[in-house]
Image 1 (tube, helix red, strand yellow):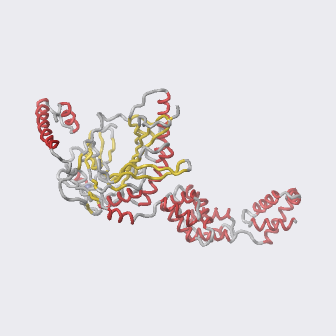
Image 2 (cartoon, chains in turn yellow, blue; image 1 turned 90 degrees about the horizontal axis):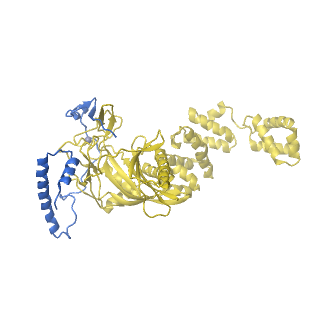
Image 3 (cartoon, helix red, strand yellow; image 1 turned 120 degrees about the horizontal axis):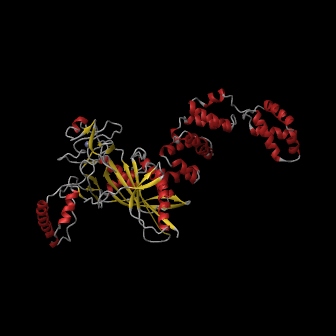
Length: 475
Length: 95
Ligand SMILES: [Zn+2]
């Protein structure tokens, strides 16, 4: 039997406000343990939480960016459970009246757009951090109370790759909004996945597994790939699937069952009496909406329209906000009429420089004006494209001006016909067979001869002029 | 609505309190009375009453995103039954 995969993701985002969700403790990573804490976030009796205005603003931005319906009436609830990283013994979260519902995000699947539903985006707070030692667990409450958003997707994702693409798209949108660092390795973005299989075409969902402990987008994808094959094997051998939580073991490349906490989950949600409700009216939504920045999808369409980019090229450039801004600045500064030339530089040599250095395009240490002058020199045929690429690498490595690098490397393209003529004579003398071939009408032979001249000139000869000269010399 | 002893035991466990048999007896009776009292609501016509999650007529109580001075770590840890360096220390949690 053939099975289809059903995946839903739960993403937790830390909002990068200056202070925590319900108290004025600074959010400042890398501080000594328990130094950003106060009676409110330590859950002392008699304290009153007051929600952070900026966090609400950020949350509404995110909800709008995912086309969610903002609920006019929203409130906080208490989710009750005991765990040492939770000083109040409840987490302030949202239950039946979340901030927003019914959003969606577009991904590309098999070259076609696919809509991924977002069930809800709600507000909550982070817990503390536990460090396990041999004989005790140590608790740091600095992270306790950092505002979180939980983004719950519909089970609309049908493959590990789609899950990966959804996360990449989600991160890109949130980065554009500038409301979270979205760094999975640092924990500012966390993702749990629900995955089940069902016979192809079936309506009902199969028994699901909840996956935790992934700390990169690739980890999420790898864990899902592993689960697809594990579940397929179980189903094909008619073994019963159990609903369980499994942890991704990145080193072992497998998921392992998590020892279930005793008893079923019983969080006894109830409205937090310490926190008044929120009424989010249309004027407030309109105000935030009007201040939303251009989002990746809109930017992509505009790049395609204004700069005649292909969707594919535009997609590469807009995936990171910094890269999109850098690219657009370069394209606008470029004076040539065919913007495609600049785009090719960006997604060609520049992107490969960025990739080999494991940085983003806009993080390359390269002055835009230097890039423009380099491209200009290639266009004026003062330097070959090949040499230009090596100048680019050096310019990024040394931050020297390209003119200096060209001079130092003696890389100016040879367009001087006298000089070229000399090299051509040598090449003709050394390659009589090819000369004969050329005279016999084999055009490949010309390419070969030009290649030989290029080689002798250490790549500095202007190939177009060389070709013309040989043509004239031999005809 | 009545409440059986098993439910009371379960609630006690969720709240991490240990009950002696006589306390279980006593609390079960008290909870039974409380729930009976709340049951009176089901006899009322509440069709025209909208659900209330909060009794105060206030909304949108927010604070500016401006940092205050946090507690010094030694102050935060002052009442901790057990600590190690700047950390609170608890019995080992096994995941
Ligand atoms: Zn605090």
